[in-house]
Amino acid sequence: MTAHADSRINLYNIKHMIESVIFDMDGLLLSTEPIYFKCYQKAAAAHGQNFTFELFKTCVGMSTADSTKLIEHHFGGQLNAKDLYRLACENFESYVREGGEILFRPGAKEAVEFFHRRGFKLAVASSNIRRWVEGLLRRKEVWDYFRVVVTSEDVSRPKPDPEIYLTAARLLGTDTPQCLAFEDSVAGATAAISAHIRTCVVPQIKQPDTFVREHAFRVYKSLEDIYPDMDELLG
Image (cartoon, rainbow, N blue to C red):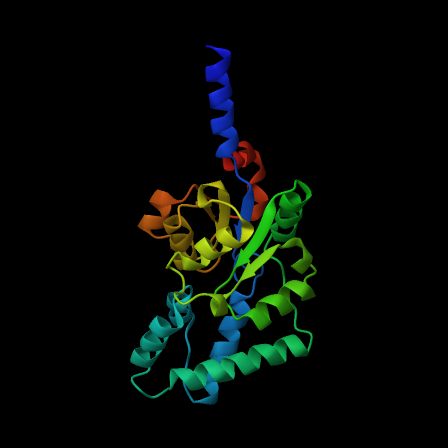
């Protein structure tokens, strides 16, 4: 092999190495999904209705428009989805204000710190509202690790559309093939995969569907499990 050919291979490898890591927040970094379920359950109970875990599980990762249709169909018009959302949000904010516990998912903080220490550019791509995203990340003392935070308020099309991941990559100044994404939901993983980002899935509430399983780079039980694969994840 000539020195010139060897140089071209090295440049190719360098060009395609991972530079940036993008994390979802709810259900991936923070174990908020069980809390949200209780808030919705309490909100529905206030209207004399039962919000089941199966219904919540179906809604996880859906756009607001799609989950609104599903909820209103499920309750047959006996419960207005906007009223449910409003009361569930009030319940969650009361929970946070009163010092309710919000835990990291296993290995989540350590993963953020691992990539930050090694000089990767980090971002959050969350379907939540900015006020909650910033508030929760600051409360858990990881806000300062992220160069970019993109929320539902920064895009016009929610996950599973890739817009939120394309926006995060653009703001990081990184081409999508040089990004690594961590997601928990089907919609989030579909968004990252559709943005041509190397995607790892760490499910919490809902297991990956066929599309995600076929196209995800890896599926893990926990962020604690990523380190043996680090050369492949970043190569």
